[in-house]
Length: 453
Image (cartoon, rainbow, N blue to C red):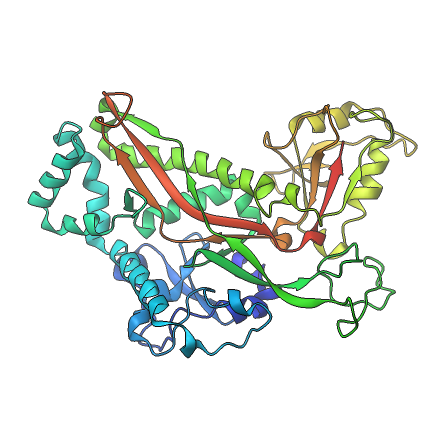
């Protein structure tokens, strides 16, 4: 799949700290029947078996849904939990993983496998119909649901300690695949995890270098400066990038009695609302969160104008082409995009060209059909980027490859919470909240350039 092919450049490193949750044999790698019927399949990335959804998106580690439970296996490691104390070591005896951690992983596996059953999915889909029958009384709805369908107790067993019930993999994969298509998340490399922290092997930067992640270069390569040997003082070393997995909680979505009457269309409606909110939340985090692009001090930046103000001038076209576009190392240009607010695009189109006498043009890519080009590079505009003119010097443009430069960690245990009318501000409605578990951080600062204004 495309996702697998585009991440092989460092899969051999990633696999070192993301071993399968359990040792698999050929008889232990079968996914639950409901997941197989929904198009999920197991593929190996590097040396790590992962579950992919029907859209080709990495969904979870294979050991989450198949194989023996962690408490039953002699050698177990979850997606990175034992690497924090050993950041400089990649060869760790997995038999040293404490029994308490095995129990935690086993409990996680058990609940995730419960959500993958047909009975759990049926109970999840029916919950709103019973809420309507119970006249919005959530406790009564659960009682009626269990009484008429004893297997619905699975829904209650799948409760998230943070509130709400975990959603089945089929529903979550549809939500997250749509989020990937409608946000910056789809341009980054996605790595599933079952831990609260995702660890990614990376190169440690040389403090005196403008580049943060290149292997040592002796000179003559053109796009990169000369680099010292790792064996010398101040040279490169290996380390682990820490990516905390956060809870991304959507704003409450009100569901009226009238909407509940159309229960068949309710979940598709909620899915679309979840997608819009989660897409904004994760894109905002990728830009401004801890480890985000615009908060990473290692990413080189350059001013887009030569005056004292904070607006474009007739040197801005040359500055974009020379200090931003041409400054990005060649290996990242094939997948690079320019990200900016729509006002910056308009300002560039209306600015008088400088010494090159070549104005910045924005045109539709008639070959791809779904992308605009800014000075012949793919363009993305977002209201999350600062508008121009600005009042202070700040980043207004990002140019680079999110695929090569950014990692998004994803867990498969999202949850949905229904707040009944006794708790809601509107007594003619219930509120629905979706909580996803994601994390993101820049892996290769050298894959980006930032334009200031």
